[in-house]
Image 1 (cartoon, one colour):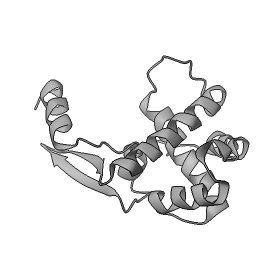
Image 2 (spheres, one colour):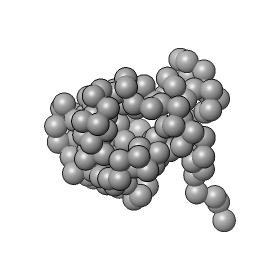
Image 3 (spheres, one colour):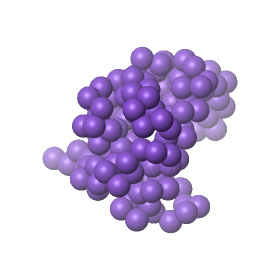
Length: 139
C-alpha cells in the first residue's frame, strides 16, 4: 500500500489518532484508552474517547512549547520521529516519577486532579525529564 492510500485509510479507520502513538508503539507505555488498529502491515493507535484524546493533545502541545530549547526545535518545523519520541517518553517518565502511574490515561487524570489543570503542571521538572530522556541506542 502506498503512503497516500495508507494515510487515507488511517484517517478513515482511526478518526481519533492517539497523540502518544509513538510512546505506545515503543511498547514502554500503555493506555486504557488506546485502540490498536492494523492497516496493511502497519499499526496505528487510536483513542477511545474524544475528551481523552483532546487532553493528551493539549498536554503534548504544552510540553512541546516548554521543551523547544531542550529539543532544539524551532516553531513551525516538523518534529522528527526521534524528537517526538523523546518528547513523549521524557514527558511521561517525568510525570510518572511525580504521580506514580504507568498508564497514560490514569497518569494524566491524576496530574489534573493534583495540579488542577494542565497549565499548573511543573513544566520545569517535566522538561528536565525530557532532557534526560535518550532513545534506544543502535547496536
